[in-house]
Amino acid sequence: MHPLVSHGPGWRAASNPAPLGNSGFAVATLAAALHAGAIGIAPGSPPNVIVGLALFCGGVAQLLAGAWSFVSNAAYGAVVFSLYGCYWLAYAAILIPASGIPDALREAGADTRAHALGIFYLVWVVQTFIFLLGSARGSWGTFAQLLLLLVTNILTCVGTWAQSGPVLRASGYMGMLTAVVAWYNVAADMLTRDTFYFGLPNPAISPAPAAAVAARYEACALEMRAGQGHHGLVLPPAGHLSAKAEERRRSRSNSSLRMFGPTIATIQPSSIDMSPA
Image (tube, rainbow, N blue to C red; front, top):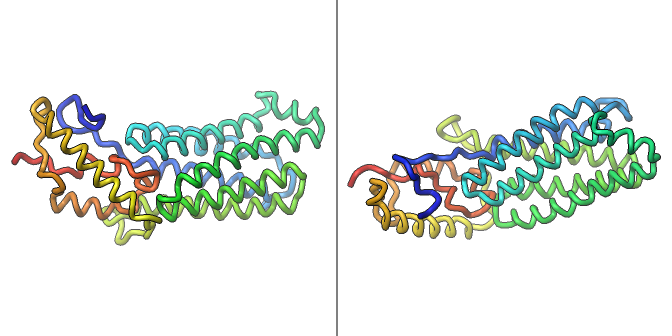
């Protein structure tokens, strides 16, 4: 049985988790960028104020978005949100005195501390580069967000390792720009014709994912028809969506769920005409 087929009466539709994940990412990234670049604060200010945002916005919110992405069959979004949620939890642990990490780094000396943190950022440079490659056929918004994040991580890694104030300041400005693009992606998801007067453009880089989604939908629909007698489901003819469902599909054309890979989850169960024949 296809995993989208409900075992109970009706459907259980999963909402798009991308706005939650990107919102938590943007909030935590902006706060960390302002601190790293000493923008609006004195250089060397204690980073304790970032801990709360890193734990709950960057960590918990993105882990929840990752878990819901798994439920939605959006594997790419699930991995990206979950991994960056872990990043922010690890980042917060480095800042929390009770973890013992700040004291250990301080006792090791400035050079050792810089190299240790540089390695921490280096592994995320590699991971972000892999995520960037995975977004090459998604939307321009996601690609731009990950590209800017990659540049931010590179500058942060180099600036921390070399203990260079100007490079760290540049990373702060790049982080601010990354947060702005993330918020744009949030707005593109939430400001639809159902919730606002107009939507924001977030076109796909390649039209191929849309074709793949349609093919997967047809395969899913055929499989469900074969077992519809066990669930009381009446599906429309293959390739047919109701007019209302088609309008919903258009309003969701900018969805970040589509950005995170061509999955069957991009056509929500609520968009399928389930009326009796």
